[in-house]
Amino acid sequence: MENNYYQHHVFFCLNQREDGAQCCTDFGAEAAFDHMKSSVKKLNLNGKNKVRINRAGCLDRCGEGPLMVVYPEAIWYTFVDNEDIDEIISSHLQQGKVVERLQIK
Image 1: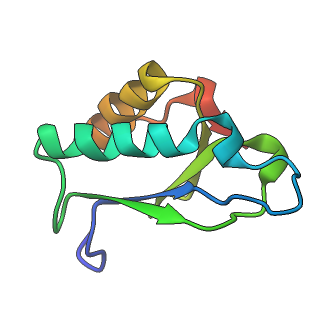
Image 2: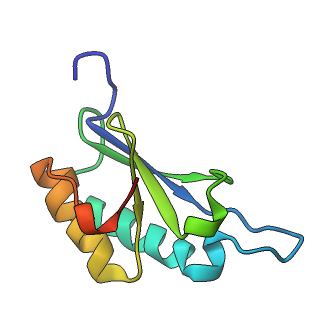
């Protein structure tokens, strides 16, 4: 971890496609982003050497969304609701265990 500013850096696709094609924001990605960001802050997991939650533009996997990617591991996740987000926080961000049922290979 010595070379990484954050232990986990999470990027949420929050792209809104103008052509009407499927995109992550059509599936609640913005609300999920807000939930994860506020939960990470409440748990005091945010900051240097901890966790950073960021917005991202299109991650070019539109048909698999909504999605996020967690670095430095480059683990891609999809999610349905806040319970999925909470599981990713608890398992991956706090315990370092990938949530395989939500992982996109």
